[in-house]
Length: 181
Image (cartoon, rainbow, N blue to C red; front, top):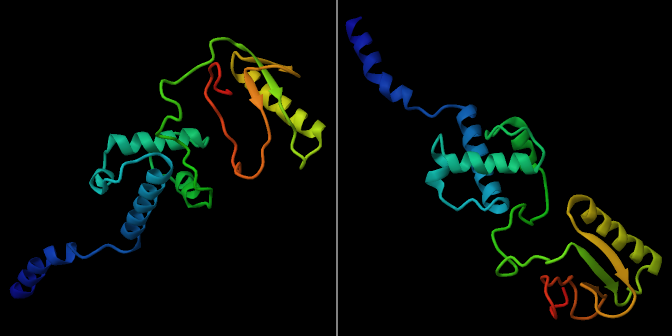
């Protein structure tokens, strides 16, 4: 009987090293999902060791930033709601950009801006285009100190035009004279 107890004690370290069942695998899977999600959409650098640390302050901050951006409860933890959002299909555009399109962060030097619709698209009625642009500018007016008024001729602060052929995407230029912005 003493030999049996000794053998059990001898095997105990081996048994405790045996991989855990589904819970540990699920936690690893969740961390892998979160790491890939945060790398793709929140500029987390690809450093596996950093994510594996239990109290990684950077990871907690990235998760909190994601939760805040998406209107979730800000816990900094991979809770059920956070993981659910991470599993949903979505577009590939990051929520947080890590670049600057225009060096020096140019800003408008005035708060009242003029805009001009130089031409209209043949794909939509003129009224629909005018209304859509007006509504978009109203949104900006509600959340910034900017106001807008339309010009029908001459040079405006914002020149809006519709082009064809080599112009599949919209172009935007920074504020400033002679920059079309």
